[in-house]
Length: 158
Image 1 (cartoon, one colour):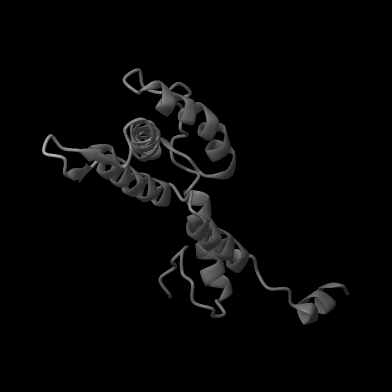
Image 2 (cartoon, helix red, strand yellow):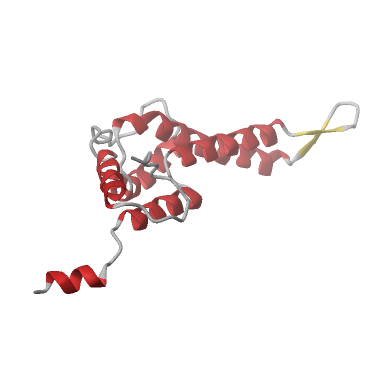
């Protein structure tokens, strides 16, 4: 029996048994305790809370969000808020700042924003929110659907 990988990108035919296992595995994604938090944690800054409220209904509708996704979702919202705050600082003080001796240095907000963008990408990938991850899910959903067999349909119509 083959090892069923939901995110397998290989273009190969699979047996009915493999398709059944894939369907069971897809259903299992929805068997975890639902993501019950409707309000963001109190420690979050306003921009993170706003992103939480904007994104949570979309994610709960389109993805099998569960309690196990809580940490990644918090990380995503916090990274989003840091990006926004860093951009405000960059607009206010510029990408480069002058030192006392007249030389220039990079605004520390540029590095903060870059790290936050990296964190946001990691959290969004973990949550299945990137185009690549959504494409993999759609591909696997299509693969999991059994192929139409006209001969079998003809035999069953008797």
